[in-house]
Amino acid sequence: MFPISAALLDAMVLSLVNREETYGYKITQDMQIAAKVSESTLYPVLRRLQKNGALETFDKAYMGRNRRYYRITALGQAMLSQYRIDWTQHKAQVDSILEEQTQLVPAEQEETV
Image 1 (cartoon, one colour):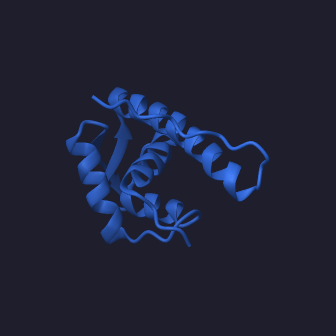
Image 2 (image 1 turned 120 degrees about the vertical axis):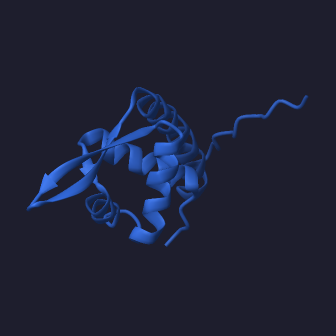
């Protein structure tokens, strides 16, 4: 398995919450499809995204008790859009090497100040 960066974790969580308002345990289970992520890894990500204004929480009754749900905010949707653009570019660059394409996709040049 390849390690997952904090930015990629954020993007994946935002994408899952963008699909539906959901709770932490379900997000962890859904993440298991692509990566081995524990609840102890996921909950700090959820708290950070909430603190940054990308997610908001609300409580919803479930089997006689309240469960904390997450929903994406407008800021979170904007962040997700940018993450998707960045991921597409990054994936193309990696694929150009891994798939042995004859013409490599150049990485964007960073401006020096």
